[in-house]
Image (cartoon, rainbow, N blue to C red):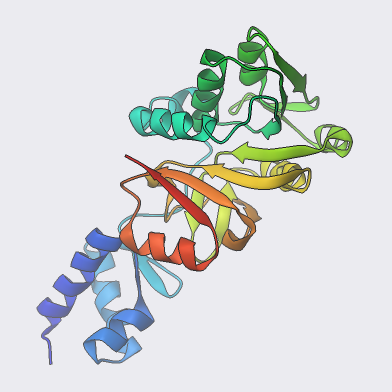
Length: 257
């Protein structure tokens, strides 16, 4: 039987490798009770080495704050650019899409602006995106109306949702604040989560653009279950364990290098 120190090392090694560990899995793998592993995790948490959540442990607090979009712009910029470049390849020359808000989404919009289109329709709540792509040739922007959320520079509310009733689009692209095994796809506010769900209903395919830092994180507003997503585009630093979980959920995972 492993010593306490060996169990702790096993837990921390797996946290570093996978981004999270489940108490049941560790107990089964080590041949000890779940009570024993809960005690181990409690000790490690008291030392600031991990963060305990229901049934599992993570390297840090998974709950994220509602950050200003300009702050988000400077986080993982290279990964977001690669994700945006890959996402543009999913568009056809004469497409009609919904594009939500966020820093990765804005990088996606910049890539759209640099390409030539026959005729591209874009519906968006994102004010920055509307201004940017208004200058793009053969790109028609439908700007949703509503109450402006200052941190995201995006409109929210029932007015924006009602305007989506008139839209039939091939794809919706949106960023997230968290992708979590237990809680699914989340964002910072409940209103944004509600509008995103409405955008999903107006599109045939749902595409999430998320850099690897979003895995294991949780926003305040729950958008949907992991199974409700068709495609996730992310970077190569995604935790190994999340890859198999996403694929088991029937989601197409595109990893950019």
